Figure 1: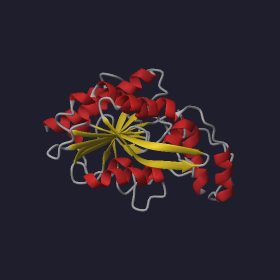
Figure 2: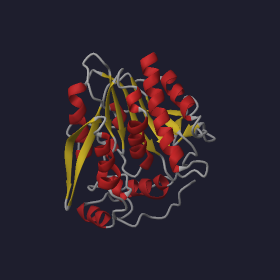
Figure 3: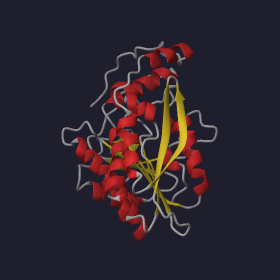
Figure 4: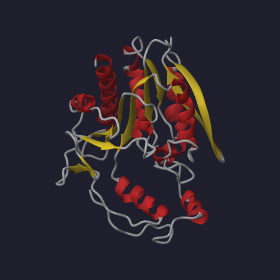
Length: 306
């Protein structure tokens, strides 16, 4: 779908937000669901089979959130490390629940061959409010860099820093939704004092590869696996998906580290960002979660057999 060009209701067009505009924006955010009920309780149940650790705590008064990671037991220094991240954008529901479903249903299939580290919900405040940003109107997925302005990003970087050089795979689980065009991109333009450029949301699953470390066979293996679960996004008339050239069916590329993206944090040989489309009339929430699981399994299997 394409977006309408209505002015964003906060701020003055062409003028970046100040503290007053950010305060107005924050006052309008509403909690819709519970991180504790949906994520913390699920992670606590997983503690029977995995090691669970708190790697940080977010303070957004009056709310506080424990940041939780799940590790495979019997961690071995001679095994490669696989990182799975979900909920970097909290509103992208299947990223969170796909990571939890992978842990519950498939992760033990691999833990004799890899060390597994999963952060299922990187942005819990945004998860509860079904939002892209954190409480400071900052996008964590543009903030994975030194001296990050987003504590969600900084905490994850601290978690993975001791493991640098050992990562084989990083799968970052995301969604592209209709609200990207109707809310989040217009809000971004308003926040930064820039014009809002309407775009097209692709109908289907796609992947983002790393421009600086392209792994085309790896991406194709994931697309092949996911195509058995849900449909793959076709390119538009310019042979693009969300404004980027399609390099193979269902695959585009971004400069991960330059853009401060989560998928660029590990230096792993094999990295990808999944993008599920939950608003498609051809996809159910169950299919979206299953697509994230299928992508994660295919990524691990490809890397182990390469």
